[in-house]
Length: 196
Image 1: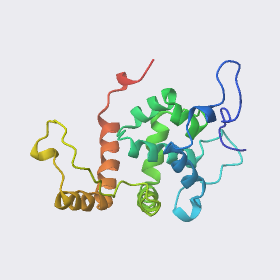
Image 2 (image 1 turned 135 degrees about the horizontal axis):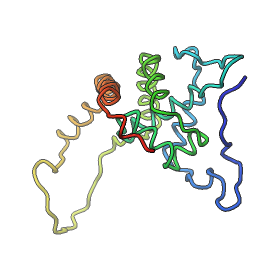
Image 3 (image 1 turned 60 degrees about the vertical axis):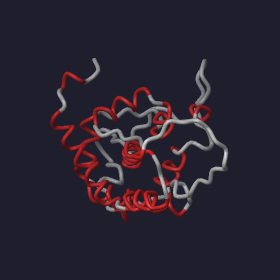
Image 4 (image 1 turned 180 degrees about the horizontal axis):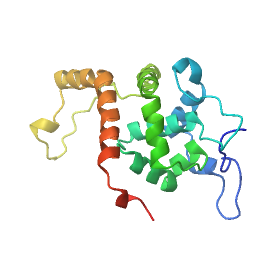
């Protein structure tokens, strides 16, 4: 028995084209897709990486991992919000092949695979840094005078940029905070927030 497959990306429908056409070649979700598809889920430490032979098919853990990476990059900090995004976000249609897992499935995946997810997040940030996908370059501006409004807290010099880059390099704490926020949000959200 395989994984749940709702619709393949390349499948055409009568009115709209394939989802592949809606996601540009430069879209960051393509990096997430290629990165997760290249992972060895067993070596990464994920549970249930091979589908059971009997029973109801499960969601592919790769799809749920793609969902969490997408949520992390887009600051979506709730399993219920991730569930809602699965039903309305074209980028997630592309990543998950139209799968729409419920919030319990999303939260349970995180709870079962917390350490593996943290390790993959660290590796993903490292890969993005190696590929120069993270903004670490210094911008140079010519001497043109343009009237603008700016405050000290929005002004950046070399020292402030170094501090900000050092802050971004401290991903371990951010990952733990993100996963903790997801746990807290799942515990505190009311069931009435679910769509009917």
